[in-house]
Length: 285
Image (cartoon, rainbow, N blue to C red):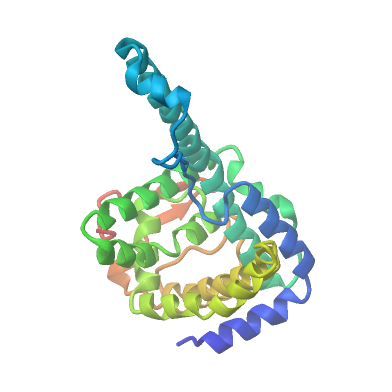
């Protein structure tokens, strides 16, 4: 069983070896939206009490002209929203996975593994699967949030390890990744939430520097979350610390802590491609 103190202590120990590279990685990921993993567009409207000659013309002018203005405004808003969504889906979400991979490998090896790992998800052969997995993760969380807030929050933590898993196994089937995340987070959702809010003091400190300080705090948080992944990876999937190579690492399941009935049926062939050794396996549910 893990503790917050254990994770933070190991994170700080490893972070000493690559802290400034971690700041750079967090900064680049933040610029590309990878720290949130999603994108959005906010439209600011003028205060209702403001009145100008243009506004009066809108209210009292030609009705056809007014309708045309409304339609153009709606079209522009829709286009901007679609561009924002596309960027979040095809760029930011992939950077998010790359960020998880960078901090997991750097924390594990206690060295800077290279900022280029942020863009590892764009590699040919795994990009579309990374996009698909991240898209469905966001979609499922959103759909569950429609059933009031609590179910959405529960699903958020149930799928917490999805970006870390797809970072390690970029070609693995979406359903298997989701299943493994559920196995890892079973009984750990509340503790993970407590771990997150334990950084609130650091977040406030970072915000005092016009939010720029957040980039200096972010590596510490990301390294701690990476330690959580490595710990649960060992406890729940039976994989020893290490061996993360982006698709060629050890396969979870089998003789590990996961019951044999839940062991993964996904294996890797000699060409590095994933395949389901049991096409009738439906244990992910």
